Length: 341
Image (cartoon, rainbow, N blue to C red):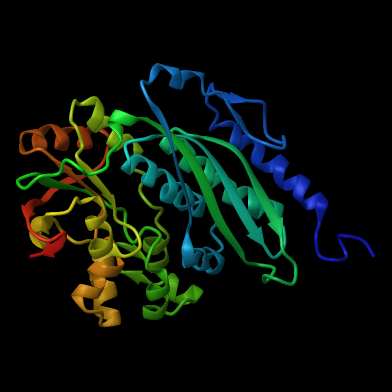
């Protein structure tokens, strides 16, 4: 008896590392010390001495049951973008710059090419957000997980000068809410999605005219990464007063998280076009509108609060970063919460 007969193939692990090295290398920043394969990822923090009061920010998350679609479609090169996005968007939402990322893949069996494909997506997400992939772990779990399945999660660390942290404390009535378009469902609500649509290859390969693509292509579209958009706003001279990453819990849970007591967010539903994938979900699943806004991002992946005088500059900065902005609402006095009208 040996480890391989017990279900863990160490040689496959070595092969996975070799295949992923080229992807990891593309994410390197000057601050990264050493290379892939050490016991710990090393990152030089000398540059933060330029900040008055540097604060480290961190985020950890996964892709939820969206990975189920990757299994069925046998497409594994984009799910890693989702894992990175879920972490770095939270850091950017707090006013920070993501510095480095680590991934964790748990699988029933290590198929080196599949693992490398997953990591290629992680690397792409890191490149989009400007952070380095400094390490990770691939854990083979025979007997605990089916051989063809895996789970993916990650952890990111960023930094911000304390005076530039976005915490919402200065949001006031009259401030304007700007939404930044999502790319689709992103990485939340898939347990409900999987109840609405049959999760088979045939179902996911079905073309929908209103989507302009197959259902699987629409649902597996990676989560947008908003790091560059937030950076562009800052470089445009705008002070973001509050920021909400619209993830699990949709509008009703996430928007109030950026608000201080005594103010309420008012979102105008007709201020932007809700993407077709959400309309299809609501129709097929007979899902009430309130539940849709309480589960999904409904086409807005990020909502920020700015001074009225900064609206035009904010919209221009977001467009310059390649994202689509919308003026979607305002802040009013009242009980902390959100109103959709």
